[in-house]
Length: 146
Image 1 (cartoon, one colour):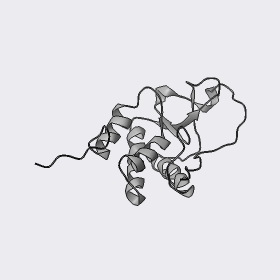
Image 2: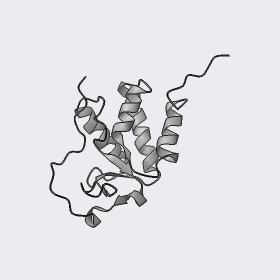
Image 3: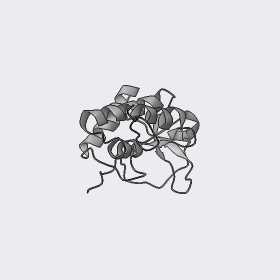
Image 4: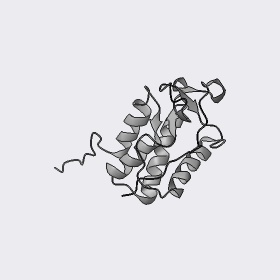
């Protein structure tokens, strides 16, 4: 009998998607950077297979009502603010986030950077957020250079 290959805590990318995005995402938003880095580091994915994995991670959270968000205020670490204008449909949002990442080189990302996806109870609508000081807009940060 052959032993099933394990990827860290998970048996497969599908189990990862279920546990990280469908079942596990309830305390705080999930960062796109984590899916990128885990897809590359844990599952050794690249090219179209990695893009498909990332698309499925985002889609799984969107199926639960998740929206793109970012930390809303440097003083209030638990306030997440919805990111508007990333797309009019879930498909357009996924395409925009993935394409923006690909345009930066499509490699590993700096931890805690880039866009996040939060469930409705985790995210404050843009107009209701605590005002924050102006900052340079950035959807996806530059990939780590190795």
